[in-house]
Length: 424
Image (cartoon, rainbow, N blue to C red; front, top):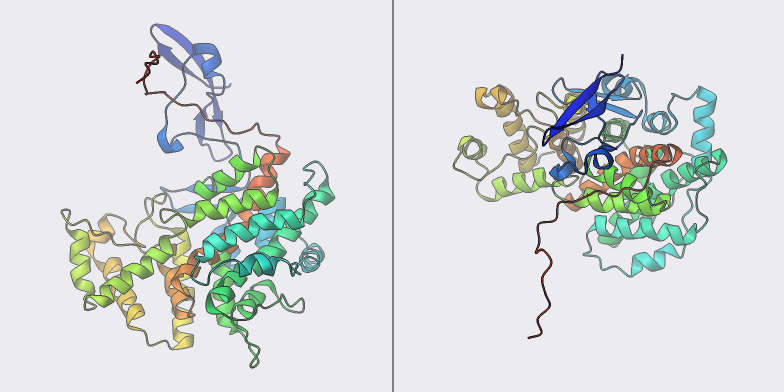
């Protein structure tokens, strides 16, 4: 028997259907509310509003659960790799060995980026933030691929997916090469996707470069952990822009811009900026732990706790092990990372933080890994974007295939009522 909710306004009762998801999440369907009652709901930030039905990601912040297409993030991080998880997220099922090999080969067909893109890149100063450059370059890909994607054509959609995954990695790493003044590298179709990331970033023409397999494995896990996260700000942006039938590159570019915000993808950058501030003022981690506990002190411990996860961040448990392995492998002697380790131990053992579930989150550990690899702080969010790309693509694809209507939120007007124009 279907459930209904009854809303009473000024003595008038309105019946609204209750939708129940596959994990027993319930939602009151208000899509017809204005038609039947003349009122709308007000929900700043859409914290209590479901914008869509989706089969991609399940997240339970209270229990610390994250699953892609029904598979636990723990199992995927242990047994899978990034392109396989990308296929799962985008197309709904894990690929066979043959299908995965074909997917990887099809991505390789599109890895060459037009030389004319370099002219656009050259127009930016070296000091430009990599995320601003990445957003512009992603949008510019539309000009080099003007044919719109037919969402009803399976081959059209598949080629668009492969093309986006292929070219985005290259232009993302070009933002780093530009900032460093290095010559641009090209994708090597003889090696894997994550290994290509390392080559594209760090290989110099002055000598050979071989990426450490432990580092490749850690980055692979990080990309998997960032691949999708339900209807967050950037993902909702991609769906909203795509709902106008804007192309995939344009929608992804909008997602990059949304991710750039410090309240979203900039969190791991904020972690390192905090650590650098602690180091610059003497490196006393205990002093800052005390400041974090002082309710009258505005200081916030970045990288601890999570807006969605009320208990623990399941991704952090996975990446902590990878971070420990990277630091041990590289033998990094960095006072910034020493401060990070002290904060981590204190937060995991201190009753104040434990009682408030302020555990280190994925942003804390990802920032540590990127710092250990020598990646500049302003590149951290670019790496986040590389990982999040398959989620953005999957959400865009789902939205188009479901033929969802154009996004058009309502508002409550609080300005002047009608007033007469008086010439001054």
